[in-house]
Length: 216
Image (cartoon, rainbow, N blue to C red; front, top):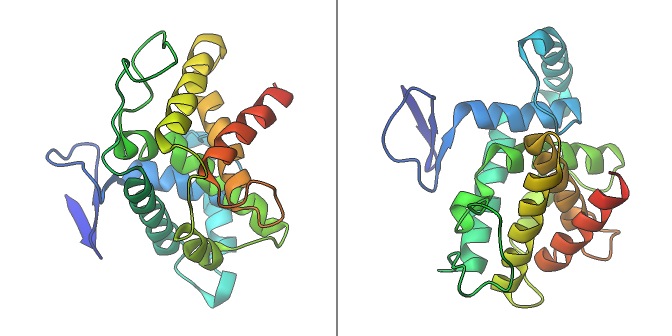
């Protein structure tokens, strides 16, 4: 069963068919929203369900009953749309990259890189972090997304990102958690209006890895 609204289709794990732009795993979106509610980029198992429900009940009172799920979904969709726009037709090609990867890249274009659950959970947790410090909120980030840009060559920045994600795959004990942590820092850097890398995709890519290394 699929649910569609405003050009967005949510797909269950058992569904088949297109999973292109605008088609997102319901489970992945829920993980991203949970990371926002729990202010944590790590995923949660079924044993955390009651705690998640408590958080949902708490957040349901936010903004007089605003639809947090819809807001998060539309924000993620807008971010992915922006990344597809600023990256254009860029696709991974190991001949063009100055970096040698140990295995298949994290993704090969804007869609396959930025539509993964690791990105969704990092985004949710980062927004919660910034919102908790009254630096931004869901509505402001929706507007900020339209201003995201590369200050340098987009391809070079993404090749660099993929090389560092490849390093995590080699060195991290729990690869998925390390990737989520990286994207958490990436979005913190990207959407923090008081930071030096605000709205700069390539500068946030580099700054996020420095923060990751400082904390690991």
